[in-house]
Length: 227
Image (cartoon, rainbow, N blue to C red; front, top):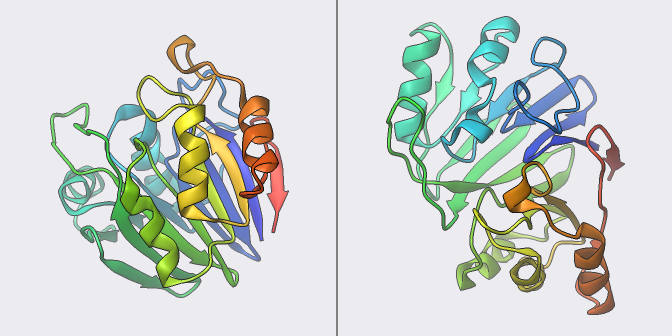
């Protein structure tokens, strides 16, 4: 299974013929590693409704026919944009949706979220099971103690973790988040896209690995990590 970093908090998880996009903010992304008209999608998953996470969801879904999954209020807005014939899944926190390629479970994230259209929605993290691997995208979150509960449902192969600060936890809090999450591998994201979230990802890597918490892979936009 391959994890491709598309810049900011956007990822493509690929296993065989399946490609799952998470938070596909590509158009207008200074670090975007692909364009909205060239990425494949078997499904599109959203952590929350800020514009730098919804991104190109509607355009990609219309082009590819991919179903979209988002927390219930956000799913309602997306469904209106896509039309009633397009498949949109609307779980709430704690809910799991099964797909033929795996599953997605929504878990809490501490953040805020209102879409550009004004829909208030609750942010979430995503526990994604695909290709026999369990990937945890933390979404945009602050450090909070319940992050350590996610692994109680099973070992985490990789965590996709915000480290940029200002809008989310910074790289120092993210070290403690990595300790709570306990994933085998941590891939940092949501950093260096804009000036307020510039940080030293290599220093984060050193802090986590020297503490013996997890391995860390710092990916440049467009780079791929194989699990």
